[in-house]
Length: 328
Image (cartoon, rainbow, N blue to C red; front, side, top):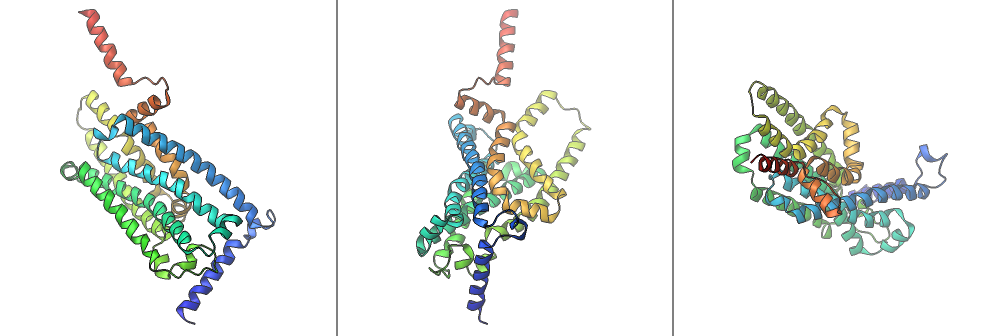
């Protein structure tokens, strides 16, 4: 059997699996299409809240000019929220063309529409994993090499790394426009027009490798931070400086701690979570975590929504000034 015949046999098997009811659902659903409706409803609800939260957070960050006076790691956090927003928008087209009869019939036979949809979906999904990987590497450098981090990791270098990562993702996935095995008779699924070598670079294998890399790096970050905190306990530090430093690092340390818990999970659990659920649930968790951990972003969001949220630091400064005026 030639490689081409083997490829089309694997494509036929993939299409059969995509339309066959799993054994665990045969006694509940007579047709897998009924399960598709509930799956799309679940994903659409999550993506709606994720898209809304990311838009509100990004608008608040932009209006409050938080990125002008922030630390470089905030650029990676904002980049992750941009990738989440892109995923919530682009993946809607992929769901329609993959899970609905009208979408399947509409996209069938349209070569460039199918390729554009799949390439955009691949870029949006992979950008989330690479965004988390970049932030993890930045945190590792900050903990392991603090002096080098101060001199080397700047906003300019972070913007350069983020741009290079996006160019790499776009260039790698745009290869599909020239290197594919598209057949108009088959359904518009990635296995129908991808060579086996390119399938190995698809989001799920990349997510598996990146999840293991993230877990190793986060484990090192977690252990190094515990060691640093133990060493700092031997010295007497001013309480106000310590609280100020703690409040400025809450956003990055919060996401660092959440990702660092992966090293305690079994490989299959963390890999399955990062491949199938991180893109959906992360769109909601990332902006909520950033708003909760960053006081400036929380105040900016409250101001954008017209809520009466009092700034604790500004309030304390005003109270001190009023007391001093009364004493004088």
